[in-house]
Amino acid sequence: MNLDINVLKAVIAKKSYKWFDDQPNIIAIRSNLNVSDIFNDILCIVYKKNGVETLYTATITTEPGVTYQKKLLNKDGCWVMMPAQMIDAYTIGLHQSKADHRCLRSTGKIFGLRDNDLNGVAGDDTDAVAKWVEGTTVGANIHGSNKAGITKSIGPWSAGCQVHNDWKKKEEMMNIVDLYKSVNGGKFTYTLIQEKDLA
Image 1 (spheres, rainbow, N blue to C red):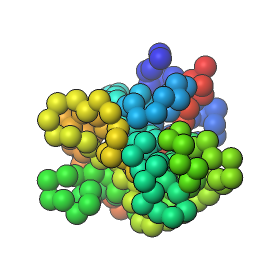
Image 2: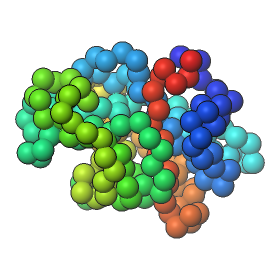
Image 3: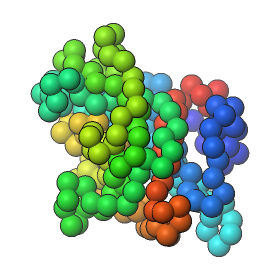
Image 4: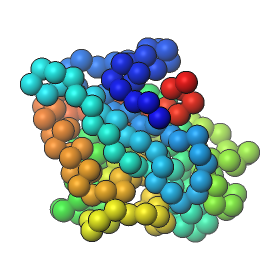
């Protein structure tokens, strides 16, 4: 996957989404490879460091693990975030109220569907309809997984959250967004696109 700031800007423009100059552009890219329980998506953040646009990247999942696709926490199904630009959808906070787990919390409107077919493949439920919901009703945070090393399998780490496989990279993300906590009322936009959008 060929990623640089200009490629990301071109995709955002092509989709008629908003590009921000005064706050970080948080963009996730869902892999074309639909492989269950694997961290194979990418999170990009374009932000200004000493006035120069800088690109941060990390390996994440934008899909829930098999654990909670088969053991539903919500009777309507497992939450699956769907591609969209979710304006002002996130704020800085704590994941599951844990003092040692900084995250971006879903507090605005997010876009996704409930998959309840129990087959372990995210987002393929033919009866599911994507819709906008209040993020606080879902809790689809952007957070970390195991603090020790690289987490290889999504498993129970995501029931719909967007999760880093490397805790250190998650902390790096939080250090970046902390620089902007007084901008835009502390609200951040999350954009989810697909790898095929880069073609």
